Image (cartoon, rainbow, N blue to C red; front, side, top):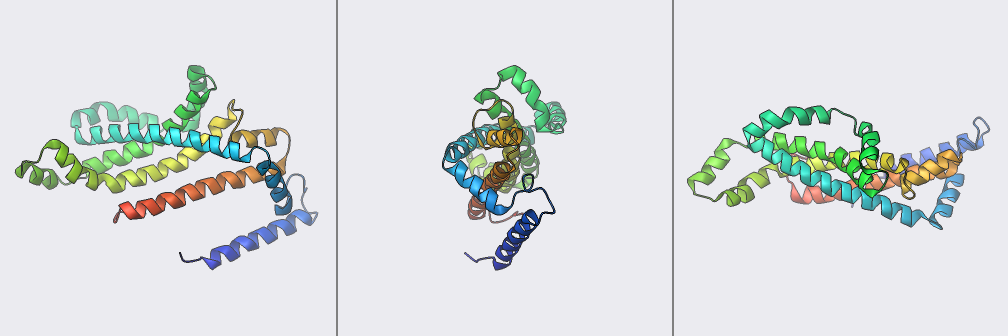
Length: 247
């Protein structure tokens, strides 16, 4: 793997400038702590509940993504291949897609309370629509010649889906999942602010209430690192599976 030395150098420069500004007296160090204090807070968190918080947040993320992506894939493919479903159901789905996912949180709390079901539903709602829209577009963009050739060779419908439709929509599915992952991370944070007792988002909420900027910034860095690593490993899988349509 090629090392991006320019990015590393820029990152180190930002860290040095951050520390200089924080310790210069120009800003309140309690509100804008430097990387040394943030690192110390991070080590303190690591010695207590960091692994538990990260694992719980990742479990919620995974459960929500699996639910949202599965339902989005089914709905997108059905509406993309069946005109009647698209004409009747797609307008409602487009309206729901226009809603900010965070706007559903109060209603979800009324429906499910503040338990795990509410958090997973909220994450799944955010993850659903990028996959649904990508599959709707992808299914409609398959050239009709592909399916006609399969019909000429008397391929069963299951075989047609397996050998023709699924490979054609694979790039659309992977792009939709990538977008869904980003939205799901945002929704993990939002859902853990509303009545959670664990998780990275919950830890950030506690740090905000107690004016613990050191821990708050450390938690932000952890959440950002989680999202970055998830996207990094997803893209490695993406490039192995998809050889065209990369973004």
